[in-house]
Amino acid sequence: MTLDAAAPPRTTGTVRVVGTGLLGTSAALALSLRGVDVVLTDPSPTAVAIARDLGAGRFAADGDDPALVLVACPPDVVADVVADELDRFPAAVVTDVASVKGGPLAALRAMGADLSRYVGSHPMAGRERSGAVAARSDLFAGRPWVVAATEDSRPVAVQAVHDLAVDCGGVPVTMAADAHDEAVALVSHAPQVASSLVAARLREASEPAVGLAGQGLRDVTRVAGSDPALWAQILAGNAGPVAGVLEALRRDLDDVIGALRALAEDPAAPGARIRLARAIADGGAGRDRIPGKHGSAPALYTAVVVVVPDRPGALGRLLTDVGEAGVNLEDLRLEHSEGQAVALASIDVLPAAAAPLTEALRARGWTVPG
Image 1: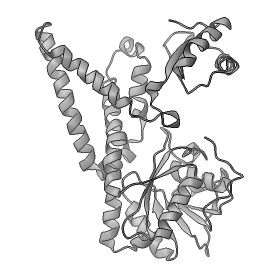
Image 2 (image 1 turned 30 degrees about the vertical axis):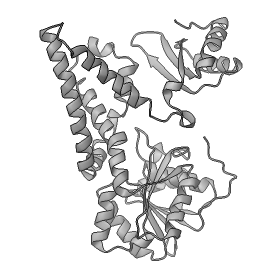
Image 3 (image 1 turned 90 degrees about the vertical axis):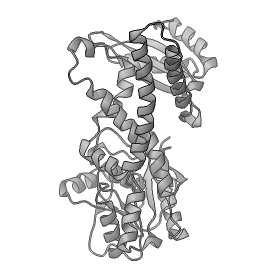
Image 4 (image 1 turned 180 degrees about the vertical axis):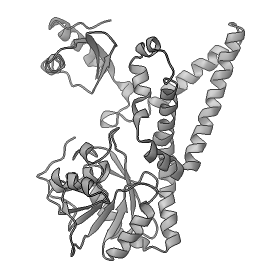
């Protein structure tokens, strides 16, 4: 999905973006692309200058009268910044994109902030890289954007945040703050912890052992390089729900460990193997619920694996050949092995297209194992 710069924006008036990191700058780029007047501010002059130079908007100036304020700052200060923006611009709707919603809302209530003009939100998008230089105008394209309205929120404020999400390419999803925090604990925060813990086991691994790493390890540890300071804030802000998910995960892990220990002592230990099989099967059933392209589960696709020479233009030629074969590519993953001059390209296609694609690629000289 790409943003259509010609489409008229739903967002009207000036939008003030407070915080020109990855999310703030990406939203500003998307809005500016649609012709929305965006003003930028950030505690770091360098960060805001980079965002301006990228075309995300203009510097904030005296006399700016925003209709909407988007706060994109660290979770541990978001409530204070939102409260300040509500006070400074008494006619503006204020939203934030913090990854935790319940804590900031409770803090704002305690401050006596005007919650009629505040609607928390959270776009479910990001990158391993941070800062304005990593921003993309299509970062939110096709991604869920939670709109966490409360009973205090005015309908016009809720609509403004809904329109903001649409103008940035996102798909608005209405969800209460507490429900949002429970959900992201399961689908985002606990996976970050699990990924980091698995990756941490590699610190003292031998070079030969690390050299055996394949795509499975890369998939599991993909987000392990995330910003530690930011994630400490996120996890602290959603501590209860995340702890609950990890405690459930610990119970499952203890069951697997128990089965493995039983097998280590007695390879014929009754019931141990079925416990292991059930753990893997349950994982597959859960994974099949993850939405894929057009809302379909990844299990609906078949992977065609192709050996790609590690030289300039090879991947481009493969993609061209896939297109000329008349097959729609649903997803693509690359796996590199240490010391090898080839890569494995795993091309996800609809099951009915797998055999014709395999035949067409082999006819064009590609090695398709299996």
